[in-house]
Amino acid sequence: MTQSENALADRLTVDLTTPVPPLAQIRQWLTTVLADLAEDVLQDLLLVCTELVSNAYDHACAPRRLRVHRSHNRQSLRVEVDDGSPDRLPVAGSSRLGTFRGRGLIMVDNLSRRWGTRLCADGKTVWAEVPLA
Image (cartoon, rainbow, N blue to C red; front, side):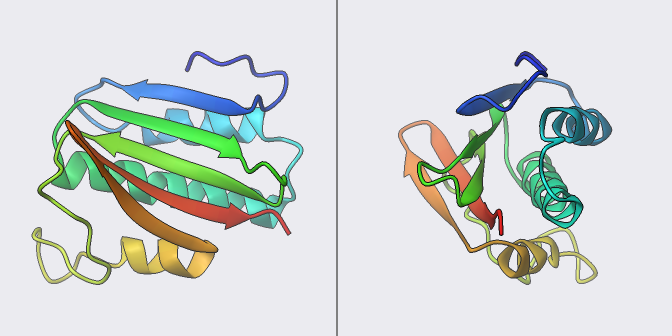
């Protein structure tokens, strides 16, 4: 985690280079950096981050990166997770890993204002906007 923990800057970025997702570290770091958020908003944001990062590890290849930033109007936090698999688009409610999987994006959909995917030349970004109020 490379960003100052004193306050949330306009954009926080974490390169996800470990072989397994560092979910506990991400959650602990964001809890410290985003201490000014209401507890319910923070918990929603942590769940959205956990789900999007987990999906990048479960369904896509490296390189992976997490970004969190406040919207221009400061009404929401945007979570973005990049990965190197533009051909593997997320689908809410389904998983190639089995019938007991696939509910993460349904939770993301319920907790966020909106979510989606943006394709780029070398991968994709899956993003979600978590309302602050």
